[in-house]
Amino acid sequence: QLQAAGGGWVQAGGSLRLSCAASGRYAMGWFRQAPGREREFVAAITWSGSATYYADFVKGRFAISRDNAKNTVYLQMNSLKPEDTAVYYCAARLANRGAVDVGATYDYWGQGTQVTVSS
Image 1: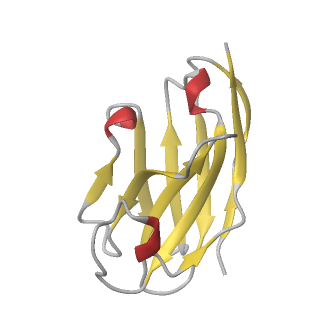
Image 2 (image 1 turned 135 degrees about the horizontal axis):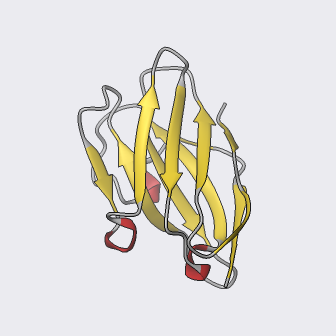
């Protein structure tokens, strides 16, 4: 089971940190979905944490990390923009199943946490 937390309301330019609790040797990803839009990839990290991947629109603003001792993955979001408003989902994949930015390659999904950025 995946449990995402940390969403909320913040003004543009502010920061939030999302967390996702997940036990097991999973590579993890964050996706988001805004109203009326398709789900999109945000960031991913390997199980060891040695490699990270980002969507172009968050590079330099968001950082994904993990603490395997706590079975938790984090998404630090800085310099938030109104267009970052969305429900954010964490996802887990058991093995290397292809492109990390494709939702279909993930095996498990969390329930989502709302992030709202006001201008």
